[in-house]
Image (cartoon, rainbow, N blue to C red; front, side):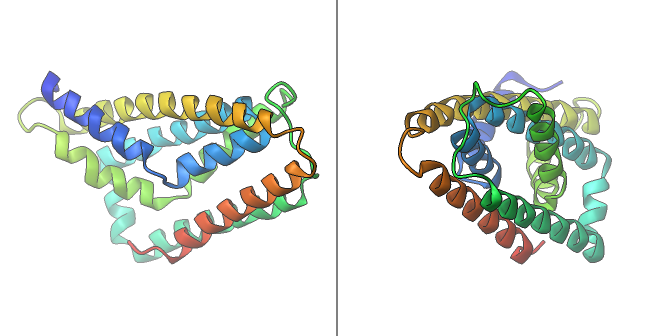
Length: 208
């Protein structure tokens, strides 16, 4: 359905875009450093699960409807911004220590996974990105266009998951190295709150 050469171009472009310092990779990075690689992997899995929704929405034209409705776009945008500000507030209230990947409770994993999904779904810019990006690699006359877009979306998800897992492992290692520094947890939590706040404000101020 998709030519091999076209698919390689798509994967190369997807990897380059995923590696850019955007909200998702910064979110995974901050969680991994502050709470360990296990927390980062759980969060990354949630973020990438949210991509399934955005892919389907773009393929079925739902994203186009959200984009065409200023009210719908604004509601989702501000809901996402408020959620990130809430996470920033929670980060500030966390204790002055943070946990290694071995100390993350099993009960925290589903919570972090859900947090990743919610953050992704409440960012309408992701839907608009897929709406603009995927059709560029769709080949007319090579089968169902929605199915081609869904296939490309899944390929994007897989490579993003792989990169985010690597980022989680690396950042978790960095976090474990600085665990013994006095008051390190407090400063890491402050930095995490700052990152969440910046992402939230940027989302709130963004246009369609």
